[in-house]
Image (tube, rainbow, N blue to C red; front, side):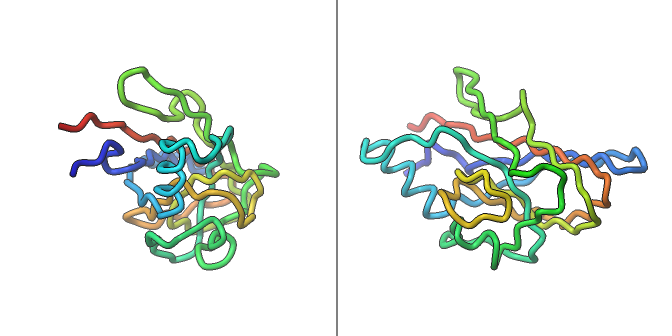
Length: 166
């Protein structure tokens, strides 16, 4: 059976270092079981839609599994909280009326306050920076960890393509 969700979310990242150098890369994600369960419940109309989603980044040398949940973010995943915003930035997704849902119009931006090696990013339903509650919609470990010095402006665009199946 083919998946209407394709390969899940893809993360397009752009780091503007304090030196002015810009580094860009793209990685795909894992849809954890919490995400699959939430989507199934939406289709079956047994749960309410979540009105807001938020992007976070992690500094733990962690490899996500299907069992990874929002409860793991502060501990095992090692959410990075070394950025200037008081809360996780919003994932303000829009739909192109064809197949893509993404936050290209309003990227999630992190201004780093200390030097960090970042291993990945995620989308969760809680805005609480360093929090461990909510629905974990997506989590991606970057192919290569990225060193982000203090002062780096790190922007994350995350999106999913809904793929028609035959």
